[in-house]
Image (cartoon, rainbow over all chains, first blue to last red; front, side, top):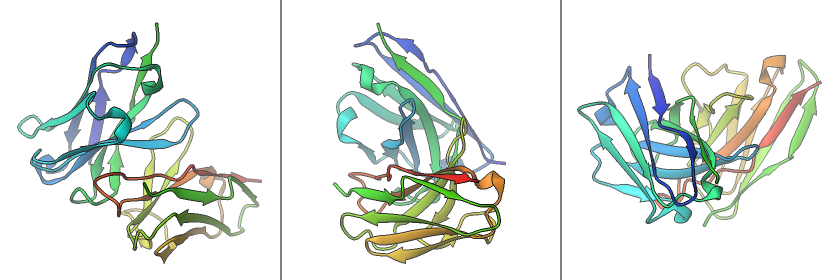
Length: 120
Length: 109
C-alpha cells in the first residue's frame, strides 16, 4: 500500500525557515517523480514544486523560486521541501504527491498534508 | 501561463442523476488533463488522467472526455458520497506549471 506521510509543518514567523519532509513507503520511491502541492485555507490547489526520480531536475512555481528548495533522498525514501524567507501568503496545507510516472504526469497518490502557518 | 477555468462553480444534483463538470484551458493542453476529487479535510484523490483514463480503483460511473481546450467529467448515478470539490489540472505545460482549475463544488440534494 502506497503511503506518504508529511511532517515538519507548524507556526513560523514571517522571514523564517521551515523544512518539510515526506516519508514514502509501499512503492519504488526512486522510480517516480514527486511534487509538493499546497492549499491555502478555504482555497484551491496550487502546485509548488516537482523533482524528477533521480533528483536531477527540479522546477518551481514562480512565487517560490529562489526561496524554496525541493530535494529527495532515495536511500531514505524521503522527499523534502526547504522553505526560506517565508511570507504570510505561504500559509497553507502542504501535500506531497507521487507522480503517476515521470515529471510530466499527474499525482496519483497524495499524503494527508502538513499545515504551515506564517504569522507573527 | 495556461489558465484553467471550471464551470459551474457549484452544481446541485439529485441522487441517481448525472452530473457534468466542465474545464476549459486557455490554450491547448492536448490530452494532458487530470481530474481530482477532494472531500473536506481530505487530500485530493486522482480520478481521471490523460483526459479519459480512470485511475486505479475509480468506479466506472466516473468518466472523462475532451482534448485540446475543452474537457468534461461526467459522474453518472450520483451517490451521496460523491459530494466534494472537483478540480481539473493540466500537466502539458510542464515544467513551468501544473495548473489547477479553481474547482467545482458538487452538492447532492
